[in-house]
Image (cartoon, rainbow, N blue to C red; front, side, top):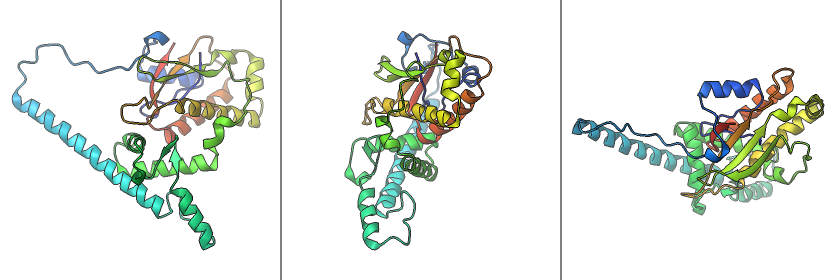
Length: 285
């Protein structure tokens, strides 16, 4: 089994002590892969006949207010993104020393900007734009300015690190046993596996984390893996737009994993900041 990503709250678990901390903190039981499925909150099956009509009315009103809040937030974010793209400042203000013709080229290029294969210019009316924007809104509790800031920082990070082309990079095959994509859950979500047991072999560990360049390559490989998983998603209304992460904890090394833990924390921050609402659930096995 193997590899990693982040959940509906942007959380991600990798590494060794970090993995155990995540499981303990979230108090999630280990599940088998065949049992993967979305968990739904179950209503109390006790007799509800004694509920007063006023209580039900309050709940209905609250639900309606929440829906209105979500719609209003989405509309506001769409307007901010549209203005930022057409105003040529979604990726920051252009260099004032640029020639007018270069600024014009940048403006046209920005109109075609996308994330995870989904165009971001709302007026293009792509069916996936609202789905993506809602992910950023949900990650920030539907606070429009914070969601916009998160989106902007994500786009800048992707551009500076050439994330759009990362799936085509040859990062070697030595990580094949440490993480891979395989199968789907019952709802059709891609399953991303992470196997920590492979690093129990000290030769493998030293080969993977023996230098700064190798550590950087491993981290980039982890980003590549999540990007490959994202490519399998369908960002449209009713589509599968999140993944499942399975952590295989068998034979996990308990000592001498400073580099692995450090990279796990870095990955945690990256996935929290730049992949909101992409991981639906973490499962340990």
